[in-house]
Image 1 (cartoon, rainbow, N blue to C red):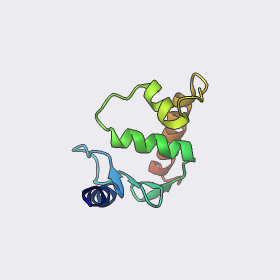
Image 2 (tube, rainbow, N blue to C red):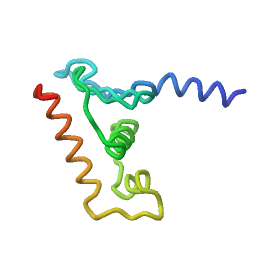
Image 3 (tube, helix red, strand yellow):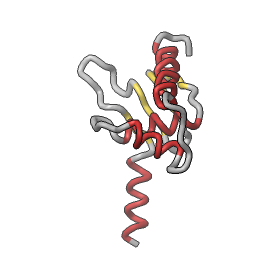
Image 4 (cartoon, rainbow, N blue to C red):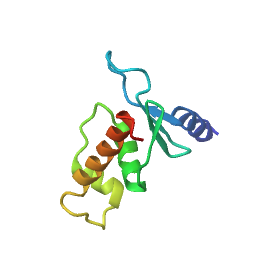
Length: 107
């Protein structure tokens, strides 16, 4: 019973993940909705692949922490699958490009 309550509480708190807001940023600049798997920037929907979404979700859940590329690779690709050397860098670059497109009004 206790684990069911814990899961219920976790699902409520993780339904929308937001990055910490800096003083010069409007509220909810970047929001991730776990159940719909949607990411928005200033209300503009950001189109992400499944891997890009999972990477962003992991980074947002660990905001303020140092996350190694090895940990990210294991999270995204598993223990057996070894991605290309720059796979994480490429995914991060794509996420940044898509977020920037929304911020500039192109999304």
